[in-house]
Structures are given as C-alpha cells and as structure tokens.
Amino acid sequence: MTIPVPVPSADPVPLRSPVLATLTARGFINQATDLAGLDAAFEQGIVPAYVGFDATADSLHVGHLLPIMTLRRLQQAGHKPIVLIGGGTTRIGDPSFRTDARPMLDEAQIAANIAGIRKVFDRFLTFGDGPTDAVMVNNADWLAQVPWIDMLRDVGRHFSVNRMLTFDSVKTRLERQENLSFLEFNYMILQAYDFLELSRRMGCRLQMGGADQWGNIINGIDLVRRVEGREVFGLTAPLLTTASGAKMGKTAAGAVWLNADRLSPYAYWQFWRNTEDADVARFLRLFTDLPLEEIEALTQAGGAALNAAKARLAHEATALAHGEDAAQQAADTAREAFGAGAAAEGLPEIVLTGAERADGAPLVELLVRAGLAGSRSEARRAIAGRGVRHDGAVVEDVEARLAAPMLPARLSLGRKRHVVVR
Image (cartoon, rainbow, N blue to C red; front, side):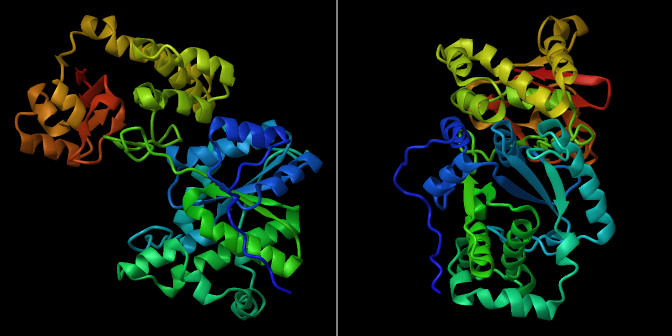
C-alpha cells in the first residue's frame, strides 16, 4: 500500500470548527497537513492533541509560550491537551536547525529539569481525569523500554534515509559540512515513535509544534499511518520574531524564563511592557485571553495610546504565567521605579539619544556613565560576576545592549545601586 506523504494545506478552506477559527483569527497557524480533515475531526468530537517539550533546562521560556497557548486554546474549545515531556529524547537532543550537538545531560540533571518544567503548565492548563482535562506524560516511559533491535525492525524499516536527508533540519547541517552524529540523526525517528505511542495509548490525533518541527511532525504522521492505518494530523505555529527582527524572548539579560525562580514576575512584566509598537496587537492576540474586539479597541488608536495597550499586555501575560497578584504587584513596582517613585528615591537617570535608542547602547558604557562602575573593565567584571541586573534579571552577556524596545529600564549593581535608563 502506498502511503501519501503529508503536505501543507495550501488554498484557504472554510473552517467550521470553533477551535480552528479561533487559532486562525489569532495568528496561531503556520502550516497544517490537512486543514479540512482536521477541521472535520474537531467537529466530530474531542481531539486529543500533543506538544513535546524536551527537558534541556529547568524552566521553559517565552519561546515555548506559543505552543503552550495553542494547547490552552484547544482546551478552551473542549479538546484534550497532552503535554509530552521528553525525558527520553532529551538524552539525545533535537538537532533541528542547530549548528552543533546539544550538551549531553545526565539522568539527575534531566530529572531536575523535568521537575522545574512541570511548574509552568498548571497556570495555563487544567489537569485531571476528565475527557478534556490535560495530562502530562514522559516519553522515557516507553522509549526506555523498547529494545534497539525491535526499534530497528519494527520502526526503522518505515523510514527512508534518502527522504530524511531532504529535510531542511538535516540538509542545512550537511550543506554547511557541520557534523551530524548518528545519535542526533535518530532523533526524528524517536519523535515519530512518540506520536505512534500516544496514538495507541491515548487516541492522540494531532501533533503541534513550532515551524521548525514540520519535518519531525510529518515523520510521525507517516509512521502512524503505516503502522496503524490511522489518519492523524500535524499543525505548526509560526516561529516568532519581533517587528525589528529580533528572536522572540531575548533581552539584554538573556532568555525570558517562565519560572519565577529563574526570572522574577516583575522582570517578566517589564519584558511585555517593552513590546515594540508594531507587535502589541499581535502579541495580545497570541499571549492573552482578551477578546479580539477588545484587542482591536485597545490598539486601533496607535501612537502614545499604545502605552495603555502595552501595560494591559504586560498585566494579562504576567497574570497567566504568575497569577493576578504577581501581575498587580509588578505593575505597582514599575510605577514606583519609573514614575514618581524613581525621583522620590533619588535614582539617577540616563536619557538615551535617538541613535542610541535605535542601535542600542552597551550596558558596559551605561554602567560607567551612571557611575555604577569606574571603568569599562570594572563594568565587564561586574557583569561576568553576575552582579548586574536589568529589570531585576541577572545580565549574562557582557556585550548586551539596551535599545528602544527595552526602555524604560532599570539597571542595578548589587542590591542598592540603581539607574533608570529612558
């Protein structure tokens, strides 16, 4: 039997299911293997759908937020989210669009990372035993149990190396003559096997992920069809960059973590408050539960009126990740730091020139200008020693810069020395 290779839906199709209409209107959909078929499946009943998250750190970050919010939208529409934690696949590492292999983590570190990651999802999803309650599973539960010979015989025979070499995630590495180990090459097989196991165990019919996961998702769909003869689907969300082209979730202080022990709720709030004007409406649609009509009303005026929309975005996004009380406290702290409170505390201020706001001013120079460091070398040592904070988050990059999207900002050296940069 010839199994057709899934291809992305091209022409727009009329959508009948509320969940796909919502995902489309809010900007969540990049590609789908069969949008009309998936739409029909959503109309017929509850669709279990999963997203996988490898445990490469003890917290997820804003770059993971789009697939998390996609699961949230599905649950709000009456479908079942499956959170797959890659306790098994983390031992290999996803090579997709990387220039080198991920660091190898030991069992203890992976377990610690999984414990940290679990904390994120309770804020966004409702877990339980009901038909639409979210569940969390670990692919180590099955990957660690499959003998290698059985994996080669029962699963590996369904994969064409010729075809695997055509996927962009692999082809790019090879074209650049960058090493791709046999270990990494097997990652896409294991991810495909995850879909097969979830299809068997939980009736999962949909895998979702970022646009960089398209090849891996197609492999899983193909494997389920070959082994089970079952129709399943794939859906990817766009890889987000800001209007200025920066990678979503990066600041002068590094990654924007979702766990409060990695990044304070205040710093998280400030990240969203510093959203570029051109991104405010889009981020409100993607990262808050506000109705589309309210988002339109908040953002249609533009200009200075967008400040209120940015504050609303910061509040709603922070409330989702950290709770309503934390969001309100962050807003109060920001008013104290950047409003009358800053002047009352006698904090020094630095006002950047237009060129500095556009190109970014080096933090090293700002620390010297503010008198927080006596020289550039002293400022560099302070950053390298993790003694400098940007909006409460430790700065990890000595080459970090502050530009318009991150202003106003509060730089701190130690606990008692601060400067406000506008």
